[in-house]
Image (cartoon, rainbow, N blue to C red; front, top):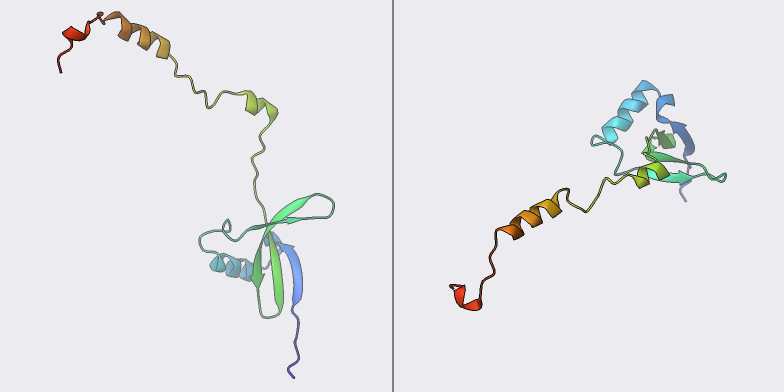
Length: 109
């Protein structure tokens, strides 16, 4: 029967890794971390984002600093996505002024 040796498991910040391990993590994720990143919820309600990284001796969960855009109530009140087109009423008024009332007999098909 083969003896199973479990790896040491560590959670650490990317910045706390040695430069060699940082390079190895970057090599593992050449396109960036976003596809492999996972959210880890802590018991106190806080959370962090991390990516898995394995060496022969250690199984790491590497914390990645993520800037999160927080939307405030003030931002919600801004009309960034206003469905109304500015000046649309003026344009529709101009279009309506040049038309004449036509009978069905006056329309050529």
